[in-house]
Length: 337
Image (cartoon, rainbow, N blue to C red; front, side, top):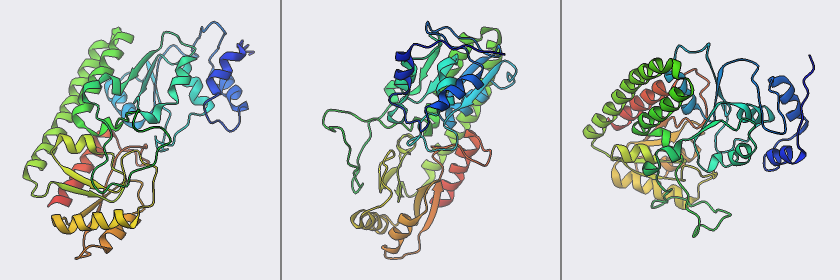
């Protein structure tokens, strides 16, 4: 079988010019092995007659899987970020091909997804439905904040003229409910013959999310201490706002810093002494070194370290969104007892 690819040089250049790909030859291999035929006028055809959905991160992928449950013969779902951290992710040549020819592309829309702009400008499928999750719940999106004691990261851009938004919207169960409805509406439009299945699946999944939301509400109401000390990055602002928790942290949620200054460590240690906190929190990728340093600088030096999963990368354990949020609930419950 011979597949002929017809490209305009400008189109290929625009796709790859701002994306870090070590070996550009990989893109041609990806095109050949993907079974996607491209032409300069933007037409496309799939190797299979399926609705193709591409997600940039694990939570989106889990939501689509739940809503499309039972439709594996009709829908193909890809999560391109995989186990890598979304903040450092760069698409491969194969990823570009998948996105360019998919029917529905779901992405978060934050700073970590900035690379999508160039890919989408040159997408082969001009009829692709693009779902920007942050735009979908625009009124709920929060600006990044620097709280007292947080080690502020130095940015290359002018912070006085550019507003940064917290992109970790998926860590709010309330947001998850809204975003699942957005995804369902788009699935129903793209595949109306299975609308009843999608809506029934949404209803079942929403019940699970509502139960989680209720459990977190009750936990917050019963907690004596509402201040969380994070000796790490802090991607949980949407979560803490939902359930009226205060927090102090070493870094912001999108920070690339991994080394805390002595001033930051001392500040967090003093806050533990001040609030009487018996717990220090980290996220799943932490080596706990900052948390250990903070504990060492407290008066009692006996606080316990607890890990909350931020789902900034796909887990290797086979867990899903619901099970991870349940695990976070149990962790928080243990830490606040």
